[in-house]
Image (cartoon, rainbow, N blue to C red; front, top):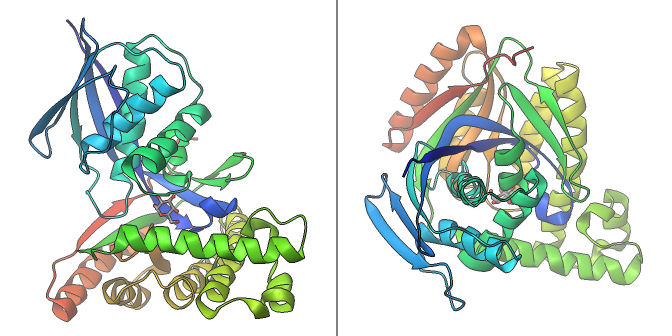
Length: 364
Ligand code: GLA
């Protein structure tokens, strides 16, 4: 039987961190790394999958109602199949050959790109038709309910809707979005610390619980509050006294970050890179000091970037505790930037980083 090929990209987030599950704003961009799946129909109701990167093969019956997480890469594939079936979509059996170049565990959403590529493959091969917003939402559910991370919708949404050379401003409550061109002459440089601290998933879920504690507090005082999106900095200073210290700071990060994203989108639209750079620096400090999700390696990379040629703005990106930073760099200085940051990070930490350059002009 002939196979069909499906592909979905990873992402980098320019600004708007930990705001997605607070009904707030985010501004990610798709990157050139992606997951590709060659899907072949089977005549039975089995789902076979092989990861070329990991060198493993798995097979599951689609009719198994007791399906549960295996704690490995196959969860992202199987979770999507389980969600589609739970939503009433009848899937064909299939064999999926999976290959990707999104660095794994680096905070560039290799898992969301695997989920979205899987959804596109299973939907395509089963002759179903679902909208991209529906696909993003069901992939998020697969990750929440099957793989066990309480992530928001940012990564799956940008993997569905990202366009070359554009950032995407997303309102995570309404799912309205706007594509914004990356200004000509600017490159996005992703610098990979090459570390991932072990407690990352647990801490991610803890931060979400802190935000929920904040919502409960404010909802008791301000009736229209449903999420931290609805709380202002003025509300925080007026009514925040009763909050325990870490919860107060988590809320301050989310509320201030939401405001930064809206200002950053405007700045990007006006090619006002000075303002954008200032907002990125504030975002990093807030993530480091208030949300406490940075680590010494990320802080070092941001400091080195801010001292390097052509820099316009830099911050950690994604879930934190390792992974990557994002820097906006002048195109004509990008080679010097990459060389200098790479060398200095290696000298200071003993780790050889990887730096990836993206952001070719949008095709307009
Ligand atoms: C991870 C999650 C996203 C988002 C970011 C932090 O990437 O998958 O939903 O919460 O962390 O902004």
